[in-house]
Image (tube, rainbow over all chains, first blue to last red):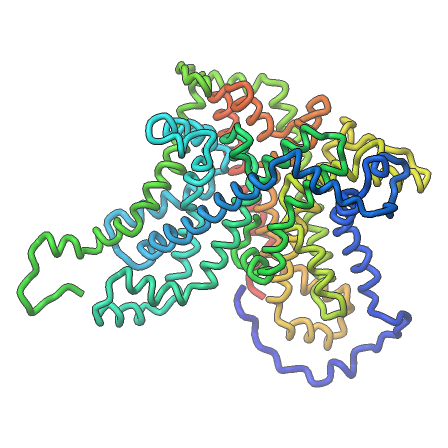
Length: 299
Length: 305
């Protein structure tokens, strides 16, 4: 959006605007916002309530809105039936590796694409951008075959049904390279040139000058990669078979299939599966929202 | 930046310090991974779509256009296309309208605003699987709380996800809920980019609140709306997770959407070629719809204030 023509600050707006009669002790917007917020939160509140009910309370019609006591046992019982500790560790390991991998590889590549004039740069960059337009589903069948091949020919650690299968294909994302390249190009090149003349190597310039100035872009990349990897479902569903390699999403899906009617246990499991990401989200809310607003991408 | 004046460095040293070597060393690992997991699969997928190939055994046979011809005759694929179209036609406008309305509401200074915003934004951090499980329970036909509300209001109870006529609408509702945080963030950023002077100028000219919203705010939200329409459409056509968890495409194929059917064919029936052909039809569909949206958007959206 281009900047609009600056107008003279209006001096008398407030005085001329008609004064609205207040017929409520609070702003009228609360009348919409408060019920709306409750509707938004309701699925989660209802999940929490159900997760502390006994199964007989959950199987009553009309439903019990306020349970007689807090039935904490659902949580340890859910943990006993589904190895959520393992799923959590798997997801944490995969997500962290993918986030760190993207930060490292996308920084190196993004810097090369932004500042180093190497042979084939433009062609490779255009090719990579073109892949951004192609839906994930187009690549997923060959991706499965490639990972299967890697497993039999290179190492089972990166083959089908391994945690490596969840890490390797996502460890560099075109989106990340593009995001960082665009950001690096907005930095003043003079700083880097001065450092080069002073004898700094390219890596030295990248790590001592460029990256410290790029923290907002790196935070965006980290936040979005974190959300994507943590919540990914289709690829783990295809690539993982054995429960000891399940991610949280897969474990939750499996738990749901196995305990379709044990609503109290299922809700307890669902609460536990959400907690880690909710904590991260609440702690870094600003970063997540900023990342979404600037990149226009959802987790 | 090469050393001049002094004695020229040996050729191999100059080669090591050249931009070509530096560039490929820095970007090489990333380019290799991209080539392996993005570019190569796109090409392989084209080839697959002309083959009959078993995903597990790997047996394959070149069959030309047969997969695509089979798609035109596959009644389930037709149903899947129709369901995806219906879902997209509902999901995108509903998300946009709800998003604009909520963004305008939360774009003011009020007490409790942090709470209101959190109630919307929190959906960003909730996975599709968790969302689907919560909505399964809300809409449970026998003990679900929504039926309890309906019962209390003396309205007929519903089967929701178990009813062929309702299941897709329940999916629309849960995904609109799940995406609202994202849509509102985009609109909120756009609203905060609107210069206050424009609103004040309109106020001086005596415009009503609705008039300002209709003639100043809404046109200035054009670029954000355009972006969201394109992006939400692309994502709507790729719907999968919620379907897999709740209905598995049922009842009676009423929620079988394109990507779900592709998953069934490629990863449950192991018809890799047929699945790849479907993926390319999806790609073509997304491309055509995006182009139409771009052409229409160019006429409707103005980028300068």
